Amino acid sequence: MSTPDSASTGERQSLSGLLLLLATIAGVAVANIYYNQPLLDDFRHTFPAGAAWIGAVPAATQLGYALGMLLLAPLGDRIDRRRIILVQTGLLCLALLAAATAPTLPVLIGASLAIGVLATIAQQAVPFSAELAPPEQRGHAVGTVMSGLLLGILLARTAAGFVGQYFGWRTVFAASIAALLVLAVVVVKKLPKSQPTSTLGYGKLLATLWHLTVELRGLREASAIGACLFAAFSLFWPVLTLLLAGEPFHLGSQVAGLFGIVGAAGALAAPWAGRSADKRGPRAVITLSIALIALAFVIFAFSGTSLIGLVIGVIVLDVGVQAAQISNQSRIYALRPEARSRVNTVFMVCYFIGGATGSAVGAATWHAFGWMGVCAAGLGFSGLAAWIHYATRAHSDASA
Picture 1 (cartoon, rainbow, N blue to C red):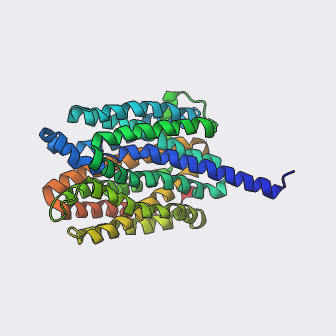
Picture 2: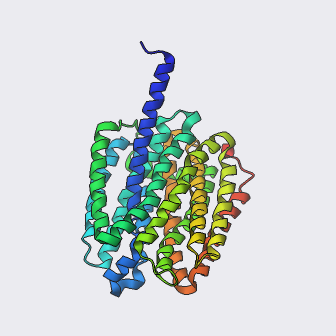
Picture 3: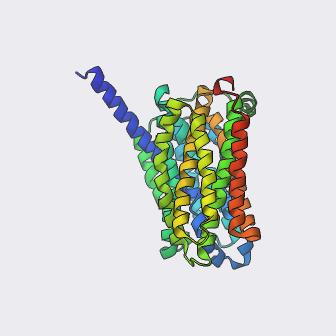
């Protein structure tokens, strides 16, 4: 006969195993929207006639992710998330196949848009973790799954850079198909069904997104801050590939991808950020995060010819972005527990619109003003986030 303590231990182990699986799902899925970033120079060589439009590839992927969040992520409140994950995985494999065989740059851009839409599998995993965990562990659970998601974001660049360097950029997308098919088998065997919390039809479900945005001040604040910070993050990474390809570095996609390993060290901040949000509230963590992101761009401004400086800046940037996202999500999941997929949708749509904006601004600023212009743009986005954060400091989450 099991004792209460042994039963509790078993429950914790079961929860830990499920959170690990959800973290893996999030990481493997979201990686697909970042594989293209260290490959931009390779795309430019494959499609020289469209060199001026290479920046549209990562921008289309992130815009697609925002679109997928808007159209698909709310279904998690209405339909079993396990089923959604499996269906989207199959369709994502088809989009990746289109990218791997793309004969022209417009086809690659279109496939990238579809990849972004379908990679929102990751945004079923994060609210699922909040559903599984007890309230006092919600921040930690979200932080654990976000660690997987953030490692996927960062290590995607490393994997893509390595595979692209030695086997060609098309192989990157083919390898992702294989990884997704293996993950689908594990999901079928291990992941439980979720419990839908809404019976609304699809149209009404989408309509509630606007109502939630209007009603919840905390959701608006978190979404605006998150969009600004992710814009800063997203303008940096594609431009880093172009910086390293030129003077004085002359480095290829493999080295650009290796910066993902450097950034992955920042993923260690995810569980800490979750626990801090549980204990101290998210605003204090967000304040620190904004300061770190601004500091990172100051470091970058003095490191245009220094690999060591770039490495330090990447670590600071990723710690700041990851801590801010987890704190923001911990905050919004407490606002409407019965609508976590939908509040997460509002937040992430804004988040990735910010990301797409950052990618576009980064590419345009690089061509017009060079590295210092990119650093100034990053400081501008982090400064806007700071203004929003402090302008709303009088309003607590409870008053949202």
